[in-house]
Image (tube, rainbow, N blue to C red; front, side, top):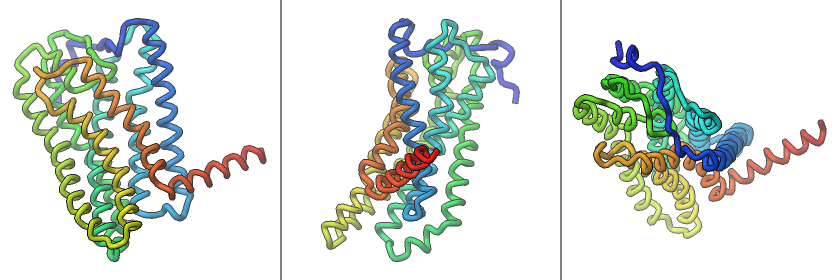
Length: 315
């Protein structure tokens, strides 16, 4: 496919979060710390679930995939954002901008699907506990995980293709810290109404359909929980679901605020704030939310930490 813009614009200028050098340094330190937390915390989750035999269950398998997605998703955006905070000329090549948009959208859409899958996993575990291991078996988990990643990279093609088919007429200043769909559309000099409408429909499929599925699933889960006779059983069920619900609200809330509103309602500063939430804050909080509310994960992380300390002392 021949995009309209590849012979007109060779590079874009990312305006970032601020043009004030002092503020940029402060933001650099803050986001660097947050990025390191994302890498370390999510890596520990992956390491704990892979090495601890008590966490070899479908729920933790999907949690591992969520951590891997968060690492990859944030890494597709934050390193360049940090680099741009330290340079005067914040330029990104056309091809790099397209690549960043495609990769970040793919990983974000894969996370949308994965959160719906995790809700279904909790539904089977709570509503059909006796059949859980036969329904959600290992081979199915691997197939679902592979399908989630594949669908994310497949579905984002339409978003990217539609966005880059807009005539930009030489406009190359992106009022954002990354190459985002709404900001590229804002550069369009022609009538982009049809493109916006199609992208909105795609957004409905990617965001509204999964969140509707999650809501319906949790209505059934809550009904099943109230039927549990023991209070301890109800608390455990609510605890495992509470972490997932918190993550869903953070991720879907900020993503829908960005992609599910007309361009006339968009504000660059507000869009940047929401983007920070689903690209940085949510990936940082996900492992903390799951570990703070989950005794099994905390116990596994302690084992991993003790092994690492013992190894370092030996070395």
